[in-house]
Amino acid sequence: MFKFLLIVQTLVAASLVGVILMQRSEGGGLGVGGSSSGFMTARGAADFLTRSTAILGGLFITLSIVLAAIAGATREPTKVDTSLANQVAPAPTTAPAAPQQQPAQPTQNQSQPAVPLAQ
Image (cartoon, rainbow, N blue to C red):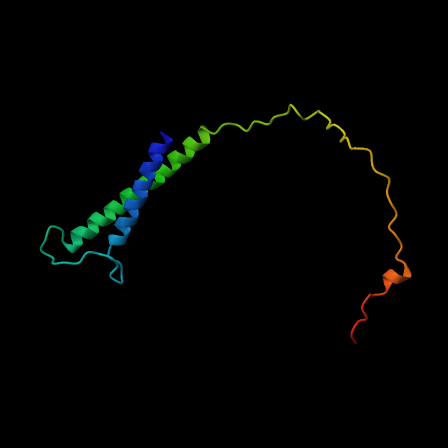
C-alpha cells in the first residue's frame, strides 16, 4: 500500500510541476500561445490550469499526510539487545614478553659522518 501511494505521490508531483509550468506568468512563462478562437481560449485555459493546480496541490498535501501517517504507524519499535550488557570482556592473553634490550650507545666512530660534509 505504501509503495503504491508513493508512486501516486510521484505522479501527482510531476503533474503539478507540469501544470504550474504551463501557466502564463507575468513574463509569459511556458504558456501555450495561440489564437483566441480555439478549443481553449486564454481565459478558459487559465481557469482550467488554476483549478488543476488547486486540485493537484490539495491531493499532494493529502497524500503527504497519509504517507506520513502510514510510515509512523507501521514503524517497528527499536529493539535493544541487552544480552551482552552484564558480561565482562575477557582479559587479553599475550605471549610472554621477550627481555628488552637496551639500545646500543653510539661509539665515537659512529657519531662522526663517514664523509665530511661540504660547507
